[in-house]
Image (cartoon, rainbow, N blue to C red; front, side, top):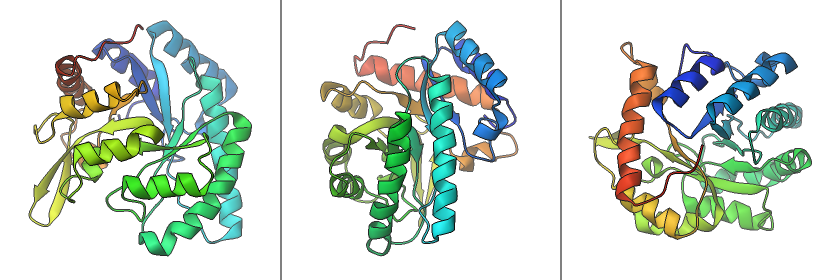
Length: 271
């Protein structure tokens, strides 16, 4: 919701009918820890309580670095985001999710493992789960790679993953296989459409292009025991368009995914 404050976004999301909200806590967003003094944190928490929205995740954007000084800065930033998650939590403390940046998997996987070990210690001390997101443009781009990192770090419960099929589509990865691999480790699901346009994949609002069978995807997670959030994610590819309207986008996403939840026969949580 670019151009809107967290408080304004909470009102729109609640009025639209959603059950939860994710807050972008990156340093360049309105929800960053630095923009949230204690008084504002209490106000945001009050508005979440009043609307009945659950805070389901905070979105970060950290990339493990070979620089020790940069690594130290990242640890401090993650600590600040984790404390924000605890301060705003409306129930169970939400996970902090992040992608891990570019490169190739074989080139970066050892660095990821070693740096994530330190990241997890910081978040564990604050009681917050780190959820890493495979991204089609990143060195970490497949569910199996996220599982490798989790297993290399002794399957700690403080490291989980984000499932987003838009990053697996058109790459010879099926919903069935990726859900089966991801299900035991998934802390958060993001949904958005992806379209193949020549050599390029473009993102759209979830359900807008009807390219994915969301009821099948949601049903598989639900029957497998997943009870976390399903977040309607708007790609910057969409939100940076000149005619983008965040309120309209929120309504379209809600209509499409509410229908998918109904078709999947998944009961609504109580607000």
